Image (tube, rainbow, N blue to C red; front, side):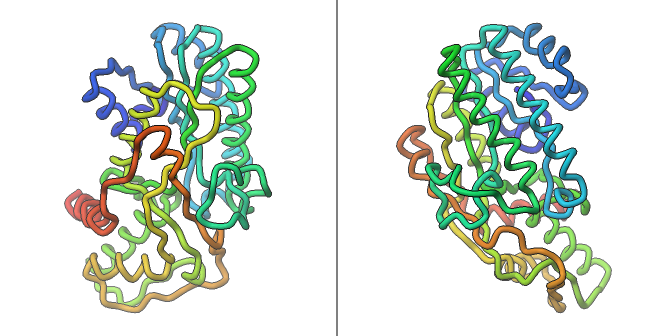
Length: 298
């Protein structure tokens, strides 16, 4: 499993181990953008299945500042891992995609058939297009080489152990950290990017891990599969909810000079239910409380 020591990877590794699989997590010390390294890692382990989770990802600010890096590293890692899996006779490859691959103005909830119906939201298009190109690579490898694969497209993940770095974190850990620090320092105002009008859907990392176990057991499906958390919330409402749960009672100031990102983002997860027998289980407010508690007790 590439990305096996990351936020999602640790949970998927544990879930697969609990399900009886022998898992070899591959961490960031192996530079998978180098073809010989990617091939050497997979060849040395001789796995039946490769779960490709390794990615360079982050929030709007990180995507805007380093679009070339986000495209190059993600597509290089994916190409090298997929081709190395083919060359070593891997039975099936399970890949983690991204909701960022969907068109900017895709009608919500997004359906998998809409994936190619437009250009992604500009702030994270390089990352989303890199992942989408890898979907097509796996489709081509299925047709030419008979290589089995499953592509999962999760919405934004969250949960204990998430990335809370201010420069690269996604919206939930970023808000939790800023509101908690404001409470600790006694600040009476917190600035948040955008207008608060954009909507998002979130998936607890443990629910995502269960989906990857189901995908390993399914082995093959010729279309991407959405993984949504089951609810859509505006960033404004999310900020108010997190502020309240963190005990912050000051003012929230919206910096409308900064981008909102995609106007709406939620997924139709009916295919996951049909193909994988999967549905999210963690209630959103409960998951937020766990995540806030983890950060506060760090």
